[in-house]
Amino acid sequence: MRTFGRLLALLGLSLVVFASPGQENGSLRGFQRPAAADPTPGESPAGQPEAGLVPLETLAGGDTCGSATPISTLQYNDSGTTVGKGDDSTGFLKQSCAEPTGFFSRLGPDAIYSFTILGPGNTLTFTVTPGNLDYDPAIYVLRNCLQLNTCVDGADEHFNGQSETLTVSELAAGTYYFGVDSSLDPSEDPAASGPYTLNVTGDFGNPNITPSATPTPTLTPSLTPTATRTPTATPTPTSTSTPTATPTPTATRTPTNTSSPSSTPTATATPAVPPTNTATPTITFTPSVTPTRTSTVTGTPPSPTRTPTPTRTATPNPSSTITPTATKTPTATRTPTPGPLVAGFYTLIPCRLADTRDPTGPFGGPALQAGSTRAFLMVGRCGIPAEADAIAVNVTVTQPTALGHVTIYPLGVPLPSTSTINYSAGQTRANNAIVQVGDNGSIAATCGQLSGTTHFIIDVIGYFRFVGP
Image 1 (tube, rainbow, N blue to C red):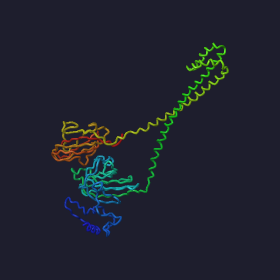
Image 2 (cartoon, helix red, strand yellow):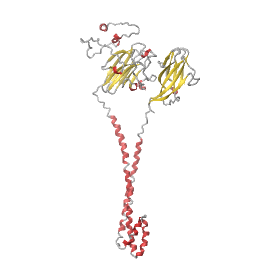
Image 3 (cartoon, rainbow, N blue to C red):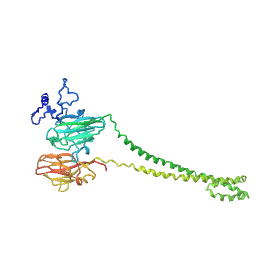
Image 4 (cartoon, one colour):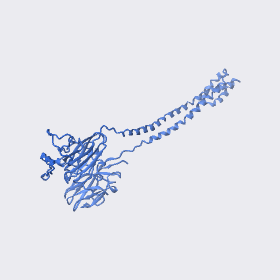
């Protein structure tokens, strides 16, 4: 059938293939790609595609990280389906990878591709087009397979049956993963999976290019060390301990020899010597022995002339004590005061925010009315601070009187096109969700029933901070 289709394509004829409802025409996926400018090449005698040309065979995305389909050449075209595949994604997307009013999780089945960035100058554009009017895909590029918190970028801007396009550029060299996924839950919405076509254009980069801009960051480290070196000069004031050498003037004990003149008249004059020793502190008790020696040494009077010399040593040293004023420079050390990083997810003790089964009030009854919207204040309840940007909740509907759905979203923004939880009459169902906090720290809940009421319960388990203080 495939060979016959190619012959008709070469003759410029259109081929119409009928399939039973719900059956995917996998044998003719090659015709879902955009028409090439040149005629479709035939196969070589060995049965292999001609070198340098895109083959018609469909590779389709892998079901697991281990079976990810490699994107090795550009331009790249492929088609496949997420129907029947598993959900391998884990964690939550960063805010930059999700729409402002969208979900941070990807609950749908996913098709996985891999590609390798070779060097600088890289740019890749991914376009995924649904194969029917029901499928609502979401796409993303991840650094690690398939950890959503390592996302580089993502796209989920359009609705059922509409294409999603994502462009990434200037990635670091290495292997990345591209996922075709959905934010919808396949157990609740059939639009969570379906057929698709993939087109990738761009450049993997050039490994021979060395970025010249990278040396510039080395300028910043050279500035900081120079400031830190100045405080090291502060140990030099320890030299001020040298003035303690000033006790050396205790050599003034030599003037005690002046007692020799008083001893010349009579030996009884020696009692007059102790009053002269009052100039020296308490140490002058030692001269009491010397009077016996002074009677013989009469030529010692010139020695007192040497006593002024110790006073000269004291005067230079105090002047050097002015240098410690340089100790003011350590005030520069106050600059390294980086604040703590506070962006991230913060867990809370599970707490019930609202229950319409309770008595009438802001967090209680009445039940949600069909087609009505009700606001619930989040900030200040259950430990949710004013700095919270989004909350992680578990929502439950019970005792609905009719088929319907409930959508929660930030208060003050338009009603999203996707529901948070779907149900039938009389069912009790629950689902988890992450929703940004809107005006006045509140969220809105809209009841999508055509008639009747339903009770609605909100339990919180944590909150997100997207940016620092």
